[in-house]
Image 1 (cartoon, helix red, strand yellow):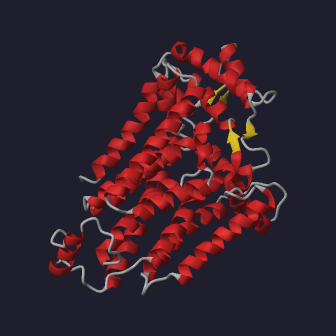
Image 2: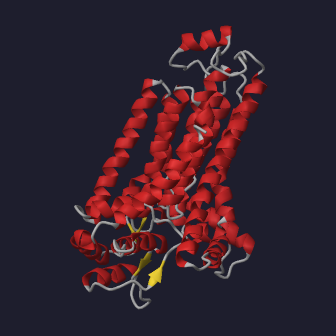
Image 3: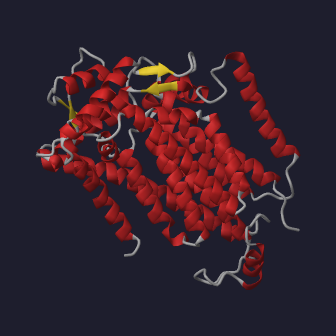
Length: 448
C-alpha cells in the first residue's frame, strides 16, 4: 500500500495543479502573453540557431500553441477548459500570428487539442503573471544548469566520476545547449535531471523496493508535461545511473565511496537484503536480479506513461459526453504511419538516419563527419586496447540494450521521428551515455 499511495497522490495532484492554474484570471497574464506573442511573431516558427545545422532548429510552433491554450483557460469552467485544451486557430495564418491575433483582438476558442495533457501550463501560466516567454526561457536555462550542477556534485560526493563524464559528453553530442530556447524541448530534460538526482538518492539509501514506484510516477509526469519530444530520456538516463552505481553490489568496481562497507558486505553478507544472500553468491544471480530490476523499471515507466495519457482521454470523454478515442487514435495512427510518399523501409531508415544526422558534430560539413567517425573509432579503440580483465558482459549487454531503445522508438513512431528528427534526436542522449559507461566498464580496473 505504501508504494501505491505515491502513485495515487501524483495522479490526483497533477490535474489539480493544472485546474488551479486555470483559476488565474486571464487579465493577469494578458500583458506578458501579448509581449510573448509579439516576440514569437518576430521570429521564425522553425528557425535555425546555426544556419544549415538541422540539430539547431528551435521549435516555436509548439510554444505558440501552448501559450494560445494557456491564454484561453477559463476560470469559469476550469475543469472543462483544462480537459479540452482549446485555442484560437485559423489556417490563414501561422501559429505565432494566430497567438498574436488571439491575445491582441481577444479572439475566442475554435480548435481543441485534447490528446495531450499540456501539463506544463500548470507552471507556465503562473509564470506568465510575472514574466514573458523570453524571460521564462532564461529561467529554464538557469534551472537546467542548476540541476546539472547538483547532479555533478552528488556524483563527486560518491566518487562516481564516470557518470559526470558520461552525462556531459551526452549533453554535448545532443546539442543540449539549445534546449532552453524552446519550452517544448525543456520539460523532459528538466524532469530527466530531477529523476537522475532522485535515482542517486534512492540507490544510495538502498531503497530498491521503490524503484518501480519511482518509474511509474516518472512515466506519469512525463506524459503530463511532454509534447512527444524526447520522452524516453526520463526513463533511460535515471535507469543507467541506477545500474552504474548499483554495479558495486556484485563487486564489479573498486570505486565504491565506502570500500570498507563493500568489504563487510562481501564477508558478512548483506543483512539488509531480504533473504540474507551474500554478495559473494554467484555473479549470475546478481546479474539476473539487475536484469529483472531493469525490466520492471521499463514496464513501470510505460504503465505510468500510457496510463496517464489514457486517463486524459477517458476524462475528456466523460466531461464532453462524447467518445474522444476515435479522434485520438487517428492522431496516434498518423504518428505511427502517416503518408509522405515513402515506402515503409525508406520511412524507417530515413527516421533513423535523420535522427543520427542531427548529432554533434554532424551538420558541419565533411569536417563534422570526419570528427564524428574519429570519435566512434576512438571509443572502439579504447574499449578494445585498454580492456582490463574479465568485464561484466551481462551489464555491458544490458546497457547496450538500453542504448538501443531510442532507435526502437524511432522505428515504432517512424512518421513522427522522420518529420521531427530536429528534436527527437536528443533521445540518443541515453545511447551516448550508455556507450561512454560501457567503455569505462570494460576498461575499469577490477579488484584482485
